[in-house]
Length: 68
Image (cartoon, rainbow, N blue to C red; front, side, top):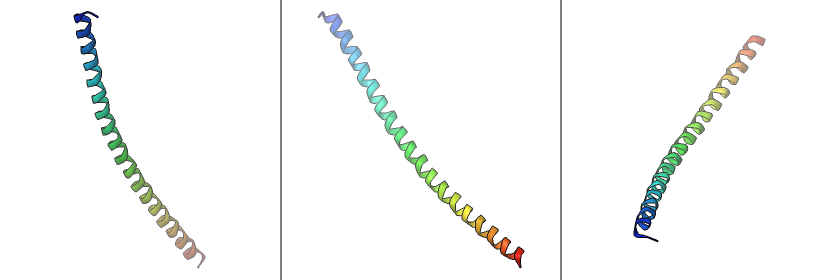
């Protein structure tokens, strides 16, 4: 291999390494964001269940009042 080819090859390898590092950084950021969204989703599902239970309870009480 000629010196110029080695330089080109070395340059390409450096570019690939830099790109891989960027991908790793992006991947970590995306995983963090995903974890945050998952946590928020869980909280929203819990709030939804609580609201659903309260509404069902109110409906039950209204039906009981209606029968009296």
